[in-house]
Amino acid sequence: ITYRVTCGAVPMQGRQGVLVSFEDITPMEQAGQMRRDFVANVSHELRTPLTALLGFIETLQGPARNDTKAQERFLGIMGAEAERMNRLVSDLLSLSRVEADERVRPVDPVDLSTVLQQTRHSLAQLAEDAGIEMSLHLPETTVTVPGDSDQLRQVLTNLIENAIKYSGRGTCVRISLGTPDYESRLRGQGVRIEVSDTGPGIEAVHLPRLTERFYRVDSHRSRELGGTGLGLAIVKHIVNRHRGRLQVESQQGKGTTFTVILPLQGQQD
Ligand code: ADP
Image (tube, rainbow, N blue to C red; front, side, top):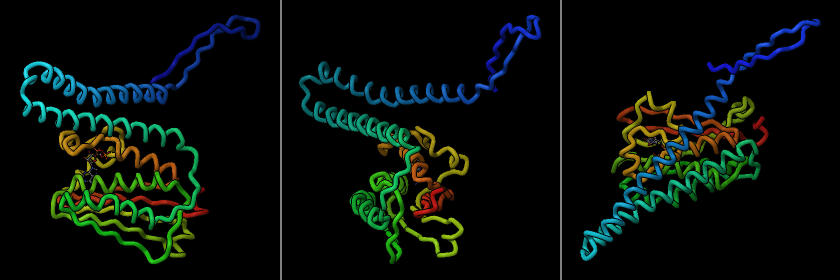
């Protein structure tokens, strides 16, 4: 705990007194530390591809000047590094946008079956290339929640992309949408969207920290797969903005399930 101690002279019943005040500034200190950590992390994440780019430019201007084969290979690597920087910048922008309007509730009616179908469609090729079977299970009735369809699509994209990215060939990704029955609805239970995979799972110690910015279970693997370490932080902020909840259950060697619970119309308060 950090206290700010202020001391001052004050007149008290005709005499000179001293007033000492103690103010708990721990939350401010923590916010400041978090900001500094964030800037350090962003700098580090940007510097890694930048250093690689500068190194390759130097090589192309020097030793590899007349080596067309090497030039082709280096340009390929430079393209991948530039793409990594591009992904990082666009994830940072998404994060700052959702953080900025987290207090404003999105209220457009969003048909979740359509959002799920669109997301599944846009990731079908990625799953096929990764050798993963993806299935979608929807209820027969239309499920509409108040929200922002682009942001909800982003939540699902991030969760499904992770499930595809981190589970090996021959595994399955199951996406389902569940609606509460009448009684549960009265008890305030919302809509459940589940993204389950049969991948490697995540050790329990990591689960509470997964939505922290730049937190990765295996940094090397995340970077190799093109991860920025911001995907789940973005998911958490969008779900918060929708007054929803994000849950994760995982068993090592068996798989992981991320569940997004969203309030229905009239359940938001
Ligand atoms: P990244 O860009 O690294 O994927 P995320 O914020 O999306 O960042 O995820 C944080 C970390 O959580 C990942 O680096 C990975 O270690 C772990 N993770 C997320 N989803 C899964 C999953 N479905 N299976 C296994 N590990 C996962």
